[in-house]
Length: 236
Image (tube, rainbow, N blue to C red; front, side, top):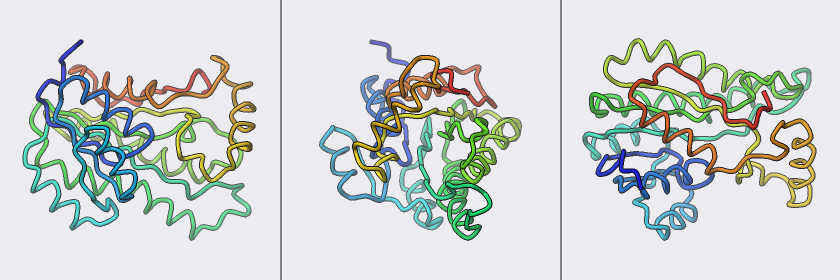
């Protein structure tokens, strides 16, 4: 077992489910000191039962974020896996108010988390964002999601030049089987995955652990910064 992250202090914001939880477990398997944050008490309890340290933090609340990171003290790596679902739909019918809410839900929670954590990230540490393929896939019905995730991605190389001594990267997942899709019934979800699979070169949708592998690579590789790495089965 590799020990790149042994005794490293790692925060996974939004790490109580899906890709964030998968990454948190992989960090913990490398003997890191991992804390996951989230708002859903049931999901946090599941993460705690899996052996992870948890903290109830509302990432839309800047004061709560400032207090949380101040109490944590120095950290080595930050992963931000805060998802959002608002902004789906063809543009002609898309509610711009809902799109604003989508930016609040994901874009600004990412930025608030970065700003709140930045004073406490140790030199040589890293920040890894989880964006989405919607930023580049140019698929009808995803212009809103693309705007949100694309806005984050376009900031990554700029922030890499601003954050002297702290690396920042992003992983851009394709279609991944997580609870993000739970707005569909199980039957509709599986039918949707089957349809997507016909346009994905590897022939299937992704698994959270596969994206988590990229997160650990970006956090652990000290020569990677300012990059957005796709993990989409070739879909893009």
